[in-house]
Amino acid sequence: MGARNSNTSSLKRQVDLSQWWYMSFIDIIVGVKNEEKYIKKCIGSLQNQTIQDIKILVVDGISSDKTPDIIREIAENDSRVLLLRNPREVISSARNIGLEASDAEYVAYLDGHCYVDHDWLEKLLETYQKYEKRCKLGGVGSTYASPDNDSDLGKIIAKALQTPFGGIGTAFAQENTIKKVETVAFTLYPRFLLEEEDLLYDETMSHCEDTDFNYQLIKKGYQLLQNPRALVYQYRRGTLEAFLQQMVNYGEGRANFTIKNPRTFHWYHIIPTITIFYFIIFMITLIAYLNSLITQFTILIIFSPIAMYFLIDIYYTFKFGQIKTLLVFPLEHMGFGWGFLKGILMNNKKLKRGDFE
Image (cartoon, rainbow, N blue to C red; front, side, top):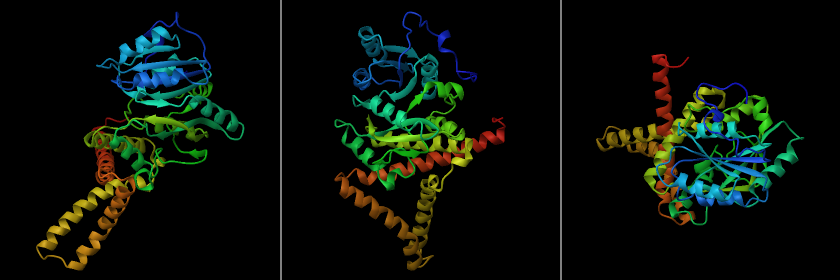
């Protein structure tokens, strides 16, 4: 696929593919690490696609559980499944290893804690073939859905991220029609296009790597589409602590991506960070009021935005019928906001040290 950056090593130097190699119509790259709970269902949903001319490239990031053993067992009974090793462990590296191994007409990707409907690939492919002559089309992506057997918290998180209050400007927001988007997850790409444009995932990014990859296409004049009927059922974090950490990671990843690509910045990216400073200001103001340093009118003015926030939070709590919803939105916004601020500050330190070229 053209020139390689220093972070990417050639797969053909790592593993002998000669006994397995054949050209398929679509290759699905599945990056995994410690997914023993979900990987069998994930691969099974790909094995049962209506399009059977596929390869399933499972790239394992040095799992410490039974994930590699489960994949090997599946591969023994299905020659379309291949286990590859990802020594760098990050998902962006897994995607590059899969791209290096692929020789198909199209490539798509999935995560190990997801599964899809039997016609997932068919819907993506039909959409691509329908629109490729209407525009300079780069790829067609999927829409997130919540598994029926996900945890109660997982279902709440999925619902929250699909609301305007929790999902503005993200790929989680639900849509009803095929539409043009800035980025999209679980995407089908024509492999020749990626080769011609010499596209790879940035392996320095542990989050927002898909957004960065898609932006490379957009900069070259391509469009991306999202199909609301191509559903990917993704299991969410099982605890509030894990969800908070995920949001911090997302915020930091978005900050890194924004610094790398300043033109992608939107006003709503900093709202969560402003929220953090607002809460700090509110607490200082409250202390000042309790010490009779400011008037009641002043505290009411400052309190009004936070009151509105919690009214919206309470509205969705009643709508979803789950008390944990009260915590999900604040954890999402505070976590993302802190992560974004952390990413900005860390990159500023690197600039001062001269770590960037």
